[in-house]
Image (cartoon, rainbow, N blue to C red; front, side):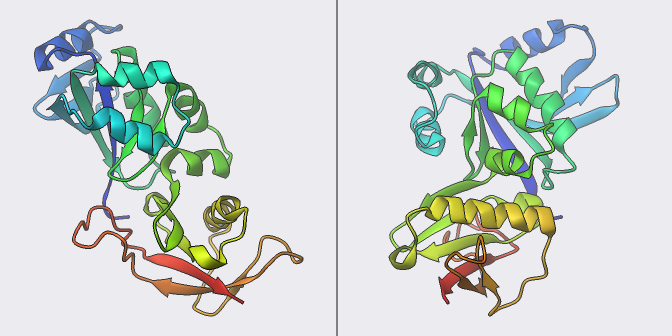
Length: 241
């Protein structure tokens, strides 16, 4: 699976030297090292790419928006006080990267990280849901950690299914049912759990009694020249049956 899964973790570190001091003193001392753009687990001979970036005046607002009302006010205020951010780069397949994600992100939490956002267009998670959801075998929990459901003028849509090697899904606003977010979430969970072979013109419905929709394959058109945002697997569009 091509690409990366990148997470952003803001924190109180005054500068890189301050962060590295905390890292070097983390117990057991000497296990984790910051070395030339990498965060290294010396014991397991494992590493991830790490970027250290300065204060971003737009970050708290970006986290608030991506949090979709789930972040508590105290955390939003804390995000406003961040001084630097750690970005960690993982392989794109979240299902095979879960243990690495737990190990390295929980380390940054221990060093003072405030919360975690999947980049470039993914959800924000507080530490409790993130670290309890990653090891769970529940597909819905895992999907919620890295896939965001949203809308623009024309569509309700998901963003983040590329981390499962699958297309995202969208449905035009004018035909969307009242429970549209539940519909999209169930479709994505079904894709992950069942890995169905889908083609243009097939139909999907949550139950035999529910509304059915035709599905059409499209490229991920939403992000224009911002290629990093687009899903290379494309997108399924639901249309009226």
